[in-house]
Length: 111
Image (cartoon, rainbow, N blue to C red; front, top):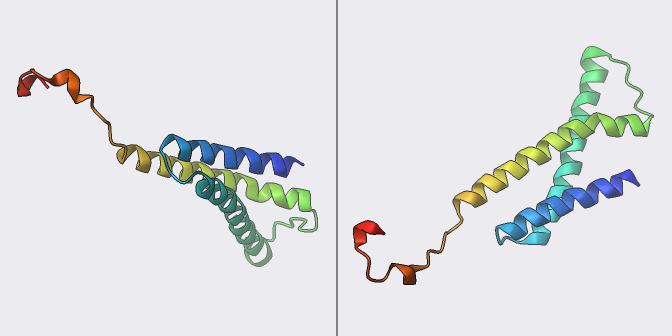
């Protein structure tokens, strides 16, 4: 149940960001959720390989609840990084429309 809420809020956050910058809303909402799962999986696999072959931490991999929490910080960090990347990229590409009718009759230097 908590996973469904997390998916909702991740999708909603990216949906709102895309809507604010006039981008494809559903694409970025779904992309945010997919990024969460992929980054969680990759980090979990990395920790599992390090546990088995290098450090022998003795993590209980049969415990699904604990295994989900291992990938959670990396997934949230990846989401935050992707969100900041998209926001900065889209802020640079925003075109500010200036109302030029107010500038009629003014000198070019004053504009």
